[in-house]
Length: 268
Image (cartoon, rainbow, N blue to C red; front, side):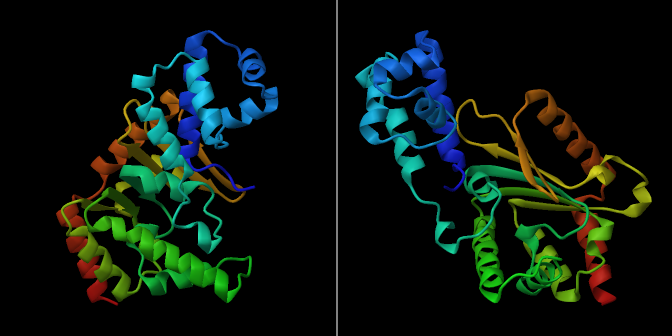
């Protein structure tokens, strides 16, 4: 079974809050719904409930008919298959997050960020991994990454801070592409030069994603060799936001960054 999407997790969270507001424990609610305890637990952790089960929960938790619409809409959105599903890729839960985000702030230490990569750079990245992948796997990953970039046409607000070491393997085409995309009104690209000295960025790459849903906090997303983690702990996310803000101050301005990237492209 695949991991729940961001929308499914959000629906589960909403149902859990409704249950807690009604004063019912998970076991009490499961008994009255004629569910076993484990099933209700799975639903609250992101397993999509059947439609009539969803309505039964709303009724049990005291949601009036006139107040049901937002929850039904959440269920309908959570029921949609992600466009990336047919590709069978290993997205580590990130793509469903990015798909619903309205703003992404990315700090990259070692690679050009995925949303700014050219197709040739993507292929070089995938082919350079230690674990050998099939041609079909690589083609699917490239296709998905290119489709993700479509949101930079204006729908997604994107701010990338790229550390200087990440440019080491970027060819002229990749560098010019960064400046082309960075010129868009909804995109901001900054270069963090090595002369800025040691800083928090050396702890590793990370992303911060913001959403339009009322009450949704920022999500911190970090990939590591064993997988990935998304963090919603308020204190940890706040600390990461401060780090990103500090790195932005250390980095060249977007205009200075474009000039820096342009000079580097002229040398390659």
